Length: 117
Image (cartoon, rainbow, N blue to C red):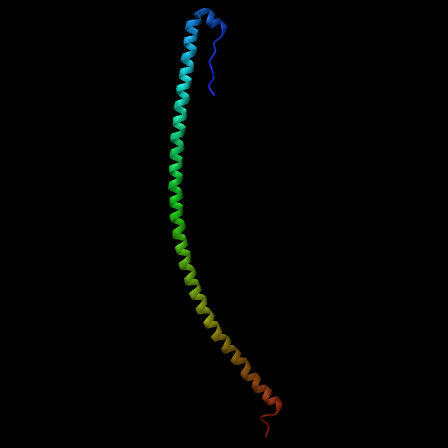
């Protein structure tokens, strides 16, 4: 929204309408030039920012891909360890179960009189 420069009435009286109008037109031309330059500068800065965001986006995508691969590898290693842990736990559970059940069977047989002569 352009702003039109106006000068005071005393300026017009002292220098005349022609010079005052010429000065007003010059101020308006300078203002329009600066507005155009500012607009161009803002557009260039916006393009620079967009290119930086594009670079950051591509770096983030690369990082995300790398992290996904690492997480997949970690997950497979973790699953292998849990499977090994599960098999070891089954062996230990069987050993403790056997150590509990065998004496219990012996006590039950002894109480029932199976070993009496």
